[in-house]
Image (tube, rainbow, N blue to C red; front, top):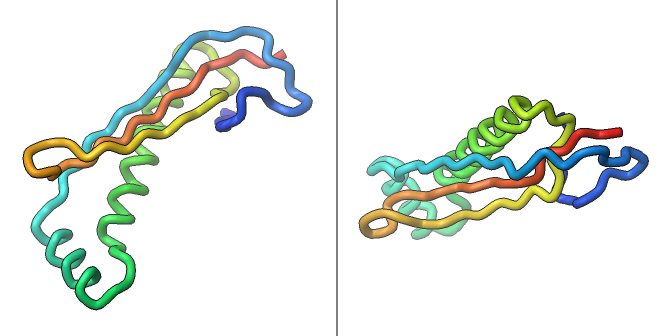
Amino acid sequence: MIITTTSTLESRPIRDYLGLVGGEVIVGANVFKDIFASVSDFFGGRSGAYESSIQEARAQAMHEMEGSARRLGADAIVAVDFDYEVIGKNGSMLMVCVCGTAVKLG
């Protein structure tokens, strides 16, 4: 399946627009990640634990979106957009949302 942030595909005409598809994932931060992130913040550098969680959540949300598009019979998803929000008590959770338009190619 072709997945792109652009609204068109070069040399691949869109025949039908099948509708919006999306995927949402909410992940919680745990104590161990918070401890390692605090150490990274103190000494400087990146927090691999949090980066890994965000990458995994994004991949899961995309997988969910792609499944929805396949059920519609889509060949591609165009105009894909990502949104990240911190939610929950004290911002303890991260929500990753991805959406796009499922299309049938000509």
